[in-house]
Amino acid sequence: MDNPLVKTIDTITTTLSNDLKISHEEAFRFLMEPVKEEYADFSFPIKRFLNNADNLISDIVEVLRDNNLDIVNIQLQSGFLNLKFDEINLFKKTADYIKNGGTFKTKITDKPLSIVVEHTSANPIHPLHMGHARNACIGDTLSRILKSRGHKVNRRFYIDDMGRQVIIAALGFKILNETPSELSKRLNIKSDKLVGWVYAVSSTTLDAMEAKKKNDIEEAEKLSSVLARLKSQDQGNLFDKLFEGLTSLSDPEKEISNMMLNYEKGVEPDKSLIRNMTKSVIDGFIETLSRLSIEFDNMDWESDLVWNGLVDQIVNIAKNNKYFTKFKDADAINIPLIINEIVKNDENISKILKLPKGFELPPLIIRRSDGSTLYTTRDIAYSIFKFKETSADKVINVIGADQKLPQLQIRLALLGLGFKKEALNMIHYNYEIVRLPGKSMHGRRGEYVTLDEVLDEIKNKAIEELKIRNQNIDDETAKEIAEKISVGTLRFSMVQLNSSKPLTFDVKKAIDLKENSGPYLQYTYVRALNILEKHGKINYNDIDYGSISNKLRRSILIKSLKYPLIAAKAADDLSPEDLLSFLISLSDLFNQWYENDSVIYESNYGIKEGKALLVEIVKNVLDEGLNLLGIPTLNRI
Image 1 (cartoon, rainbow, N blue to C red):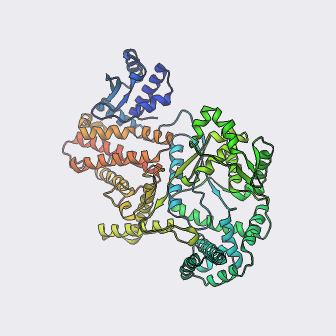
Image 2: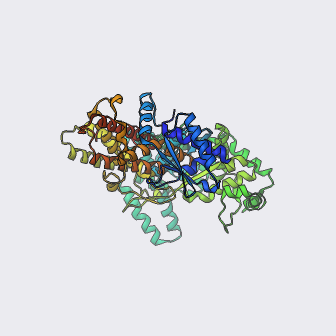
Image 3: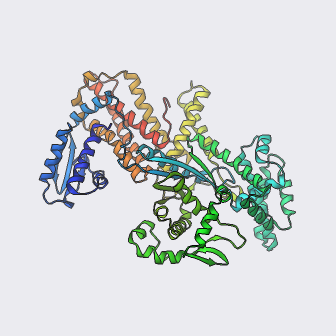
């Protein structure tokens, strides 16, 4: 059931679509273009389609009347159909809608799809950091808004457990001769943090050995200072055993290669060692992500794709394909030939894949000469698996912008291997880096700010602020509220900008109630809630509906009722930042009204009840919007 404004716009959209012979989606997009409030609430560029719109206007008016939706005035001005709602009748119908249990949920699509959203998928070698936070928050928010739109959404995490970095970390534990789970319990250290330290010590030690071998004194000295810092962080007297074990290896590269090949072939004891170490890191990830209410439907292991034979199937398909080639003594797929024979001869494919002009892509190696496969080979298998496993119409991969080339190569390889649907319906949703002022990030050297640390920092600042504002608040209540504020702060900050823009995260600004922030939205929700608690039950029979004609109140009503359409468009455009911007704009309007037009102290009873209803509408919209953004609502702040 849609609110009266949404129902009216949907009816008009359908009429425009039928009369102009355009898609419902195209008509909807034109109506959702921004318009100046003094001219109209919605506008449609009819001049693009018709010279004379009189018959169309008559059709719209008739259809609206037939559906008891004659609550909008339609005028033709400068080639635009301008729609202006009769706010009094709209307010009346909205009151009836709410009394009958109406909600403000996202407008449901008439073309539901099965969509896979794969996100976070962090390398399991250290704790989640702020780059992963952006990925996780974007991916989870996309999942929420797509589901709210009526799509069937499957959330997946790809566990990349076969890369060189994982093997280096596992080599460290092999030398220590103790599992991460045993060590983390004994030392009371979170498992992913422990693995991150072991990985940093191991990779830095191996690099220092290589620098000395090359007689690169400057690099060796740099790495020695890194090792000194890592040794100072040793909480279990592990450093010396680890360092000595690594430096005593006669051929570290051979050891790493053997472990990598053993794991790919499922040979024990390396199989159990690496798998168990990776699982301990994933357990740490899940613990961290649960703080942000981020969950997954499936956790997919890269190694399972190999052990189950899916990767070998891809290699065999490639070997029997016309685009199979040899490149640098390895099995490869001839990407340049696929581009020349398929992409350049199909305008639609060229448009979807968006090949960079003047950029030549090399052949894609799928199996090395030693028989081992590359991560891109396994990604091809995983891409096919995601579509097949879920009967997906689309797969959205939230992956860093630095992976544009590999992601494009994978799509081209799929195209060449005959998986056209998969190639054209796989979306690389890329995002840029997150910067922390004054902080450097270098996982191989153990230099990063973990997501847990950032959440704890925000939480502690929130506790301080809460105790300043309310000296009687007890510690447990302060901690509970502060945790929700920290989640709201982080999730807001990670999706506030278009994902293609680099993001600088400043804790002080991010938590400021006066800034556009998560806490600002949470504070606005609490303000609306408090007004309604003080007011009590709304008496619908005594509402003065004419009071909505006040300019600011009218703006709040129209904007609030647009929410289901805004959320729908944000889902269609995969633009969670647009939903967030809308909620900020609505909150600004509401707070401006609050400061100048009291609800509780309104002397006219009918107007007071009307104001309370308006607050109820705003509260409900904020509740829906914050839920889609994963920002917790509060009862007090």
